[in-house]
Amino acid sequence: MNVPQTIRWESGRLLLLDQRRLPGEIEYLDIETLEDAVEAIRTLAVRGAPAIGIAAAYAMVVALRHSPDMRADAESAGAALEAARPTAVNLRWAVRRMQRIAADTPSFEALLREASTIHEEDRALCRAIGEHGRDLIEPGHNLLTHCNAGSLAVSELGTATAPMYLAHADGVPFHVYVDETRPLLQGARLTAWELSRAGIDVTLICDNMAASLMAGGRVDLVIVGTDRVARNGDVANKIGTLSLAVLARHFRVPFYVACPASTYDADTATGADIEIEQRHPDEVRSSWSADVRAYNPAFDVTPAELVTGIITNRGIATAPLAENLALLMSA
Ligand code: MRU
Image 1 (tube, rainbow, N blue to C red):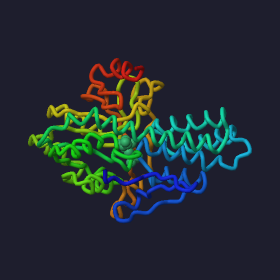
Image 2 (tube, helix red, strand yellow):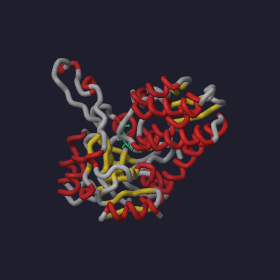
Image 3 (cartoon, protein in one colour):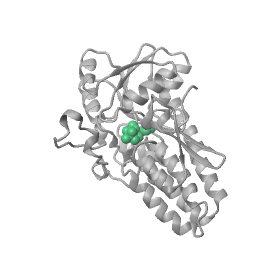
């Protein structure tokens, strides 16, 4: 599969594809310290829920490799990484796995083995999401996706894009509308780039065009990713996802969310309990509106009742989401 490698561990070095510079430049950042990693996550050089988890796991290896007290240092390094972005639960999940290793078998080798396992597992999880979701895509379908839940956001196939990559590999003809995704343009810069590069038929649209496309019957299926699924099935994802879900319900278009099991957070009861990251207003302002007040929440919460199904590595959960997710996650 012709997909970009977001995270590489090579000869003892952590290399992160700098997504701020895509698609113009393909440059890898050399992450030498914990501070480098925190900065890369905070500024979205590496982004997407599973990818920040994997990057944080390797960052723990970097941070702890010369530590005289791995257990104590794992606590502070983990806290710094978790604070870099609050919404995606995968970051906390990966950090906690690394902290357990630092406490139980504190060695560089054991930490690296765990980070590589998290990375390797993610490849398999994305493939499984793709296997479960591929049959939703029928010949001639027009899909719509938002932000980037693609290979750039994970280890390999993406979550929302995994069914697309597998259906494409099977020779199923389909087409994808990609929302540009204001304000940081993950759709325009990242998803449109990676899908086109893989030979998938793509049309880029502005975020405010989805309603008119759906009204014209031009969207058959929406698939997006998520940063956290609450116990009741509410999903947090990139700001703008909620508008798509509302539109999809109005125009009777199936609305699917794709994620690995690690994005399900049994400790979060509902979407109202998910911390929504607030980013700098300058990301929203432009040169002609430099002095105006701006509001910049990075994510929104789509209520479970607007979600047709959640495509996971364990199968697709449909309504009632709370019960069916719990069954799938405990299997
Ligand atoms: O702010 P970003 O670019 O990290 O937001 C990413 C998303 O909203 C993705 O849809 C989500 O993390 C799922 S990635 C498989």
